[in-house]
Image (cartoon, rainbow, N blue to C red; front, side, top):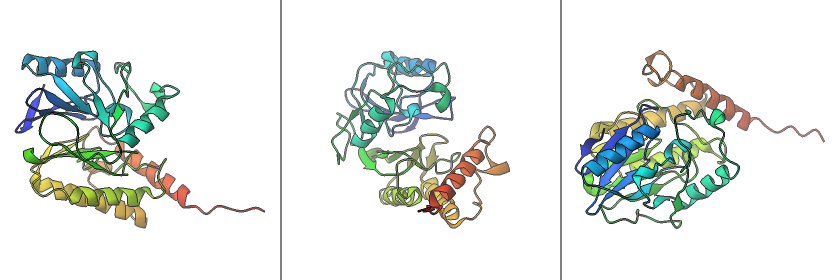
Length: 271
């Protein structure tokens, strides 16, 4: 069921990892960001929209992870946009298909229309659609071509997979030279556009108000500094203080620390 979080902005929360699909209302239809997960949820979303006389006229995927690239035929045939780097990454990763088991994709998730996104020209600053201006803040954190979205006139920041109350910063350990600095740089970019933001919508987790925007930036920054310095993060998203059902995030943290340590090991020259 759609829930309004700001004027002309609604969300549809999935049972899968508390994923948030975002609907932005325009004059002639809606922009749909990260449409959802389970097939029945997307059908429900499509019916909610059609029942209120609205159609999807544009869509946007914030980054190239499978749970942000899904679609359903009942949502229509609107153009599905992403950043250029996101779209290129999607093409490369899907060239040989996708392994459900490897990525932990539930059987009830339809992959039929997965990843059919059109990359906007590099440097595009706004989503091209007939509705409120939606600014694209592209960065290098979490995944190639990741973008946060700023709906300035509605006071809404759509953060993608950042600034979550349940997920720690999940680093891109595959494609970047310095994943921690890339993430810190992204936080600085986002922090620079938060004046006037009243509502924060993370890709996963709770939608929150103005008072939590800088608190979540600070929490993510503190986690990154602790990991970089080899300290144990005092983070409520980890260990016994984690939200029930999110205990697995501690495993992600352990994996990140291990892989970062491996990346930093000096190469041994046996010649």
